[in-house]
Amino acid sequence: MKAKGFPREFYVLILVEACLFIARETYQPIFTLYLRERGASATHIGAIVSTLSLSTILARFILGPLSDKVGTGWFLLLGLIGQPIIFGLYALAPETSWFYPIQVLSALSVALFSPLIMSLFLRIAPPDRRGDALGRSLTAAGLSMLMGPLISSLLLEFLQLSYSELHPSPK
Picture 1 (tube, rainbow, N blue to C red):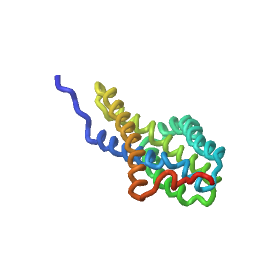
Picture 2: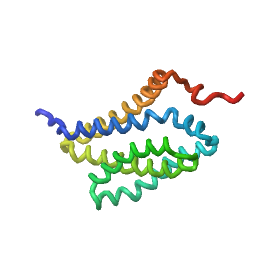
Picture 3: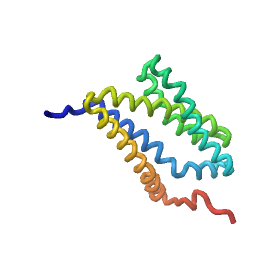
Picture 4: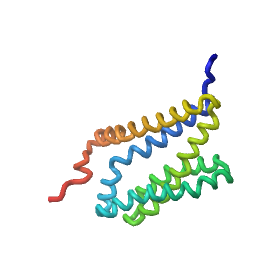
C-alpha cells in the first residue's frame, strides 16, 4: 500500500514556519546584550525577557478560542505580519521601558502563529500521516532554532563584532 504524500501547502507552511523561527532565533543570542546596551539593568533584562513568556501563556488562553470564532487565516496572517513590525519596534524603542509592551506584542504574534500553524499542519495532512506531519513541523522549528544562533554568530563575524565588543566588561 502506497503512503499518501503531503500537499504543496504543507511544504509552504513548513517554509513559512522555518523562516519565522530563524528570524526570531537570530536575534535571541544577543537580545540581552542589546537590552544592556540600551541601558537595562540585569533585573530589568530578566523582567523584559520573562514578559514574553508570561504574555504568551496568557494570550493563548484568550486567542485560541477566539481564533476558532474568527478564523485561523486572519490570525496566522497577523502573527506573520507582527514579527517584522516587532523587530522594527525593538530598534526604534526610545527607552528600555518600551520593551515591556513590545514583548507583549511579540507574545501576541507568537501566540497567534505557533498553535495555528500546528493546527493547520494537522488539518492539511492525510489522516494516517498526522503524526508524521507534526514531527516534520517540529523538526523544521527545531532546525530553525539551531540555525538562528549560527546565523547570528556568522553575522557578528561578518560585521567583525564580538560579544565582548557588544558588551564590554566594566573597568
